[in-house]
Image (cartoon, rainbow, N blue to C red):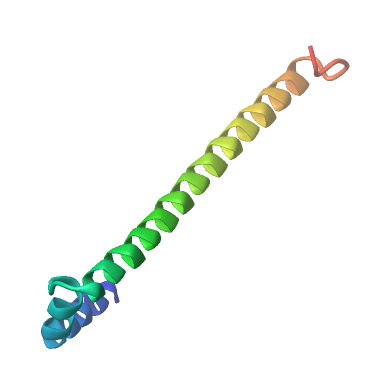
Length: 82
């Protein structure tokens, strides 16, 4: 499925190459606007990635705490916090 989507993206990019070239590589106001918009998109993407990594690290710490608790419960069920 992803191969077909990649092939479709290449075909569309080739078909619209003049539009893409004029939008990104011609001089003028459109180039500056495109750079600003792409910069904002890149910033939002990277911010999302950082947030995902932070959440995954938090989940990893929670998993370690649960594993430690379960190990303590198996060793001393009367006092699992010690």
